[in-house]
Amino acid sequence: MKRITLISMGLLGLAVACAKAPSMPEPAEGQALFNENCAQCHGVSGKGDGPWAAQQTPAPADLTALSESGEFPRARVLSVIDGYDRTGLPGQEMPEFGLLLEGETVPVDVGDGVLTPTPRPLAALLFYLESIQE
Image 1 (cartoon, rainbow, N blue to C red):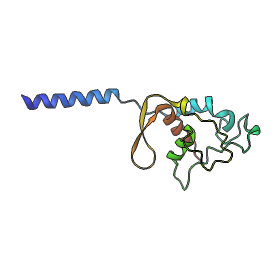
Image 2: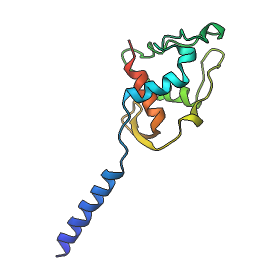
Image 3: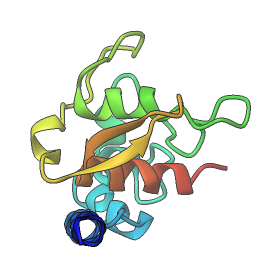
Image 4: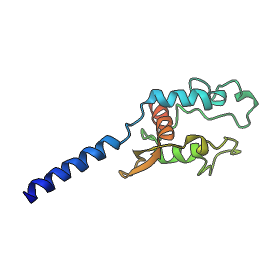
């Protein structure tokens, strides 16, 4: 009897954990955030040709060319978007979006094999940028 109860409790705990796990965002969710917050400078295509780009010095980055040797630098991209690390960026004019990208977290592999709790909107934007790499 005790064994059945323990198994039942374990299955119940697993079901509760699975029910509360947030779904991973799709690139389309990130695209909506991009269009709302980033396209003014980076352009709808992400190539740095938005309507405000001409007023920026240096010009906004081409976000379709972020991959390095075929690898998308997830940790670096997340750090730049949320404002944590702008080291090496010319002028560092990009606004910080960290406060706009709060919310429930999802587990994201940032390139080291370790799942990192990441705010869902930030993860969505990351997945969108990864999807537009050329």
